[in-house]
Length: 356
Image 1 (cartoon, rainbow, N blue to C red):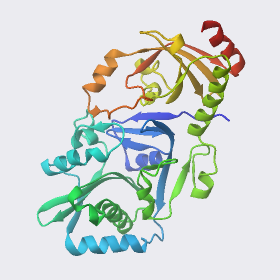
Image 2: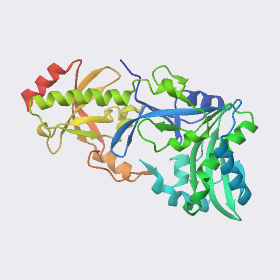
Image 3: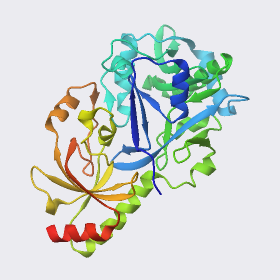
Image 4: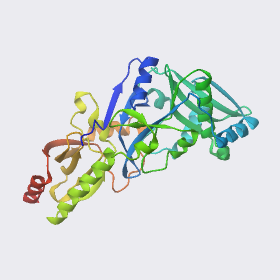
């Protein structure tokens, strides 16, 4: 089975409400001033599948547990919904809340919204929750023509028992219904990790089908063969063949894979595989040899790569800061020196055996 591109980026100088609706409907989500689409995620040293979700707001009704949370919050605290306004208190809460985030983090809330741009192309609103005059939680959401997209929820940990993250999602949905929006997009869940499953408490979601580019039920989606599982299964088969010729190998997660899918020409040679096999016997200090499975072309790849030091310096000085890496994950940007593709494993294994 052939799959579409694992990742896509759209760099935005302007964005209409209608265009945002179309991008959300195709599985894109926001990253600063970029719309990003990815079928997989590198999380805690593992490769997993991204499943975008959305609520259809026609005839939506919150569950009994969510209504109970809302009554409890609104009986004690006040809230407001307005155009976004970043201030020192929001930045403070964002910094305190960062330890709960996974993967890359923007160093500030302002950078998360704008990246390197002076202004945003998005129409962003905020939900603010106050204990007296003190801001204790906020969330941000973007507005389209018929859709809203929740992009961030932050709360003061000392108020954790009030489920303020769920409450701000509820407030966003309620506001969307009152203003005649049709869809609510809270991002994605991960197929084999429950980290983001709290979002599912908000209602009966539809799930994005990457193979047909349509929205389906949970039962339909979880029966599909996903690209992340396909990549892992193909490399496991390849590893079995390596064992037969006594070649040492290591599975590696590569969190910078999306650089290989940037449309800008100076990025076209960066490694594109989020998960591959590293061959230490064939590698050297300045060259790392990898085995990949290209799901788009249904081919195996033998690649010689090197570290891109200049890009690593740029990442370390950029708006994002990486989490600590695990032993199974590359903590460096790799670019291709050479690539050889194989439709089957036999010739690939022979070439590895001859060079090992």
